[in-house]
Length: 311
Image (cartoon, rainbow, N blue to C red):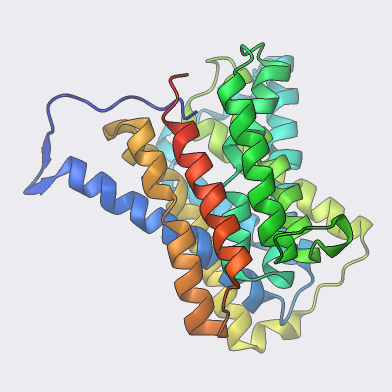
């Protein structure tokens, strides 16, 4: 499902570091970073409401990315972006990013870290559905079957039962499922864009749209902004984690997939579930029930198999 470049035959060296090994290490860091973002959300919740912390984190990351990518960003060129691309960038920044991050933040605040990670692992299936609807992707019976199987796994995780009922779904699990559905649009939207903008320009533009739309949504929700919250060391740590992880993840993930097979890279990212279980237990004494374990395995195996199906 990942459209990144396939693994190169000759593995170059970066100084004395094997690029392949470096890329694998980067994806392990990315896997941990996704869970750390949820930890950061919990820390920030001590001083800020959900959408406020979302736009603050994204704004901080946007400023940092502008500085990092300043030599590759052509402001005049961005201003000439075709109207169709502008609409896609707008939906990617709002639905696919600020709204998605808002939902995953609510998920992290209301569900166990491992449950958030496991449910979020099903993003490729939602991406497939959107690709089928908007990119005219061919119908794949195997992927559809795996999607249905993964939904069964999600129901086990969300209800903590082998006999799931809709009313038994946890609030945090519902929010995470919504985050999964909205974030998938970010990846599909990327495929709808033309070649007018480079990767760095797309990244910064989407992040800027996400920051502005997040701020507008926070105002609509009448969320308050408290300066005194910055006196809380947990809030400062959460802001640092959120900003740093948003800046770090995108460049190193792109680099890693430029030097690794897309399927292999996707499997490494499933380590997020291990980090979520580890951080959840060590930081919050979170444990998992037997139905949650089985449901998680169903989802992870479904995603693993789906990633190996030729696209």
